[in-house]
Length: 374
Ligand code: COA
Image (cartoon, rainbow, N blue to C red; front, side, top):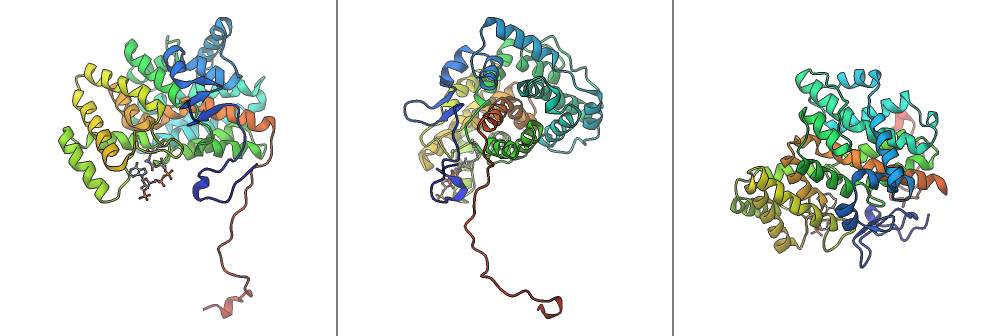
């Protein structure tokens, strides 16, 4: 591991090598295995992107057909996982549901029981939509839903389970594109956590369980939910402007803005933003988009900050009828492809990740027996 000088939050520190993704390199905003995110979002499906990340190349037609068939077969939840999900109260953060479900699945179906580690990753991606939707319906309405659907795509499968009806294509497509955009992002906090776990030679389920924990925080994946709550606070753009100005005056963070690596814009935001506009108009909620746009304008004007992927994704998810507390779990479904790719890459040329710390504690001192302590 090559490190520069110790830096707070490891900002700017090169903590390893990767052939999976570039973020914010000059000339290209974001690439997955050399493919520009704009090309992938415009021309590929989430399944093609997941395959690209996990298996290392874009699938040809035969590989894709086989992969889609396989992913469909892998969707079912074991009864023991359902039983665990039923124990989780409706009041918990749904990220805890996926963290628990992932861990339970790993206990039942250890990685080394699969023919290849990639198949263990496929199984996780295929089951996460069912885990979250099964729990959501059971915890909130006491209903044990059938988690099998006719939908070929994961996006359609998720929406069909959530709403208990076939999704309209425009919503399915919007969700599919958002899954592509969320699938991978180099050495972000959760991916680095996952790589650290597998660097100890632990299993994939342990890595993904830990990564889910890291993603939960509002400075990382949790930002899309916080962004939605912010947008919904305002009835119109003027109210939003006044409200955001006040938050900035109080030095509060505006969720869904800024980024550790991107300095001028997040290329993913430019792709999801038109979908937010389209869907909010379609849903008869144009004010939602108008409020979001005004928040963006204020943030650019006042702080030169730009929306990251989470900001307009929140509007898209809301328009797809997805409850706000399920936004970050959707991120998990998608990012598992990236986490798994990094786990396998880490193993390929592994070195235990164990950095050093700069000590700032007390100088060496004599031990005080209990009776002498103040
Ligand atoms: N709202 C208001 N101010 C922000 C801001 C935001 N969303 N993001 C950054 N800033 C300000 C900071 O307060 C800081 O100001 P200061 O220099 O006056 O103290 C400055 O910009 C630099 O921010 P910093 O927190 O040091 O940058 P970072 O690289 O550590 O943080 C994020 C990056 C993403 C954690 C940060 O932008 C943030 O918290 N964003 C909101 C959460 C979010 O959307 N997360 C999803 C990321 S994809």
